[in-house]
Length: 309
Ligand SMILES: [Zn+2]
Image 1 (cartoon, helix red, strand yellow):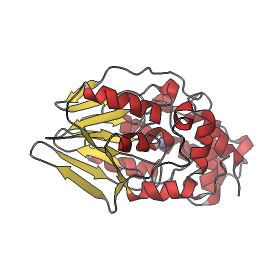
Image 2 (image 1 turned 90 degrees about the horizontal axis):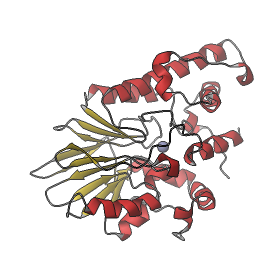
Image 3 (image 1 turned 30 degrees about the vertical axis):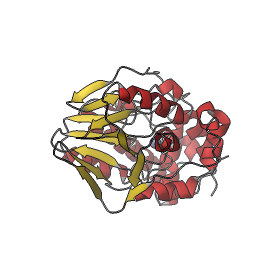
Image 4 (image 1 turned 45 degrees about the vertical axis):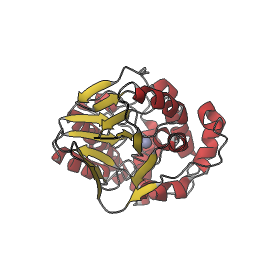
């Protein structure tokens, strides 16, 4: 089954038009000694960034779009004179990975869970080509495809450590995308989530496993992070994880109840409880359609064929 509306929903979200409060880029915030959080400008479609200082180098979490990658390359120099050795893509979406080639030209090694490359191989260069049509920063690269992460890890985890810090890169299952990766600093109790958890009504569901995503978030909650650095929106604590999970559970349950009662999509209406309000977009219809599609196809939404133009 072909789903043209998938494309429309994602374009709205990725272009920033669906974002209700346009957060401007703010000065870097020190989360712990040598760990910074940088809020991305959502009006430009940028995701958030974390910078992690090791003994002799830096790790950047999420390559971002090329325009933001260029800004970050300069910005990071004001935080530390150490070189950026690794740039981790939390997942394959353009606002997290399309800056890959910008970073590798600057000397960094892009790194990701192997599932990120699988997703790029599945969806690209179709999405990249669409981004060229609507984003000057992607168009200006003159490249025909997204550059794949140069280094990947299979299995559930990969570790970088030295005398000063221990950093874990985790894959916890199919949530926001099939290739979701997390960065976990167990000593500082800092978790970078990518879009598996965002702080606000900014999530895109179309590559997700909506049934499994809350179970993945349970694993992140079990880590008991003190600081959660989400893919979009302000940083915070574990409430970002529990809130994102509850919104997904409540939406899933509300749509399932009506699907099980035999209602067609056009007749499904959802009122979510007040506790979910931070995650509810003005127009919930794309999210309802996403849930409906997964439930009626009996497979993860991301496994249902999407049409991208
Ligand atoms: Zn995403």
